[in-house]
Image (cartoon, rainbow, N blue to C red; front, side, top):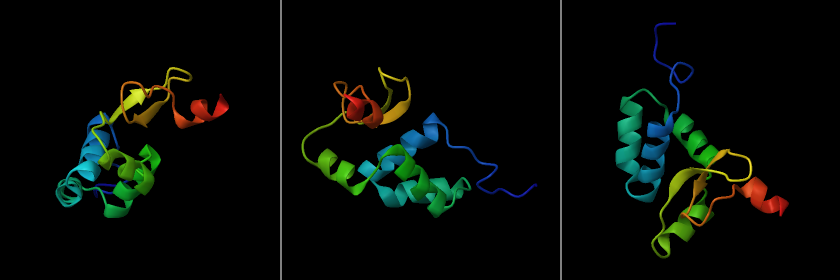
Length: 97
């Protein structure tokens, strides 16, 4: 119980922000920082997937300037990874329209 494992560590908004920024700017530095904090590489990758950091999303971000951030969906209030202030519906709510 005293060991630091991923069941004891929680992903919060700050950690999510570090993951997002790391995937967009410097993955190596992000992995180093988070593994030093006790997160495993596989847990970080799983969380990135949950946040929506797919290869397709990252490719879209590399074309043009985007204000990537976690935002609350105006349809269901769920937090999701958004490419800009005009992107305010999560993928689930966007697909319902």
